[in-house]
Amino acid sequence: MVENVLIEVKNLSKHFTMASGLFRQETAKRLKAVDNVSFTIGKGETLGLVGESGCGKTTVGRCILQLHKPTGGEVLFQGKDLCRISGKELRPLRQKFQIIFQDPSESLNPRFTAADAIGEPLRIHNTVYGHAYQERIAELLNLVGLAPYMAERYPHEFSGGQRQRLGIARALAMNPSFIVCDEPVSALDVSIQAQIINLLDDLQRQFGIAYLFIAHDLSVVRHISHRVAVMYLGKIVELCDRDELYKNPLHPYTKALLSAVPIPDPKVEATRAPIVLKGEIPSPLNPPAGCVFHPRCPSAFAPCPTVAPVYRDAGDGHSVSCLLYPTSRT
Ligand code: SF4
Image 1: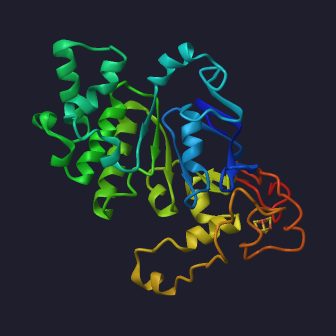
Image 2: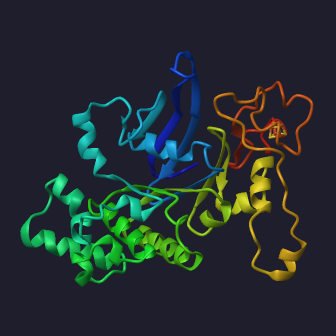
Image 3: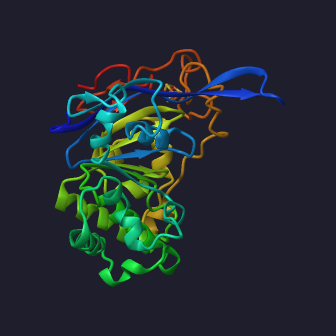
């Protein structure tokens, strides 16, 4: 049970209609990018969201921020459903929600100086002016470990890690209470990844910001997350405390992801036997019947191709969607 809930996502779905054929005349198909997803995020908490490319994790982040309009479900913040309030009501709340993108090069306008890029939200929302604006830019640069004299440099004059620091500074400009970190370290070298994760950790301690930290492997989210959710083909298949997930994974997909995480001890690493999943992730345009993971699942048994498992608490707040765990463990 999460204390001090900041955001509650209830039965969130996002479906896209895909036309096909030479002149897009064939019957349109529905792509269920996100299908009936529910979770909460507490104040100052990090929820890691992990899954293979195309599983819908970025779409979840964008639906929370209302960058995609959800097809169904609710996103509750301060008692309001963000999916159903007017644009006028949403605008001030938007200041509290920010995003850090995967590729810092693409998220920064090459014609903007660092100061222009970081100050963009301040200018859009007209919050500070004149000398106070310059001071705020210098303060934000300091917060992310950059020197204020770098304010007039252009993005190409920064390294990849420094550009991601600029992206973080821009996200901090409006004092957010929640940031979607959309694979913020995937495009960076391993040594820089640790620095950026430590920076996000420090900022969370300082300002009590909550993160939805999206990544495609479990090794990246381990250090920063309080809880971790695993997604497969538009659905959350497992969610629990970080330590519980790494010690006692339940879902066969989570077990496979964890078995692929390298172990720093060479002796233990030499004995590691990764679980190799069969085939590719199926198309969300044509998901398998029953449990959507059954064509690749090493533990599949008779009912799996026909019976869809229900996502439920298997005990102690450890939720899972798998027919191997039909009832609470307690
Ligand atoms: Fe595997 Fe069956 Fe569990 Fe699905 S329900 S994850 S196929 S064991």
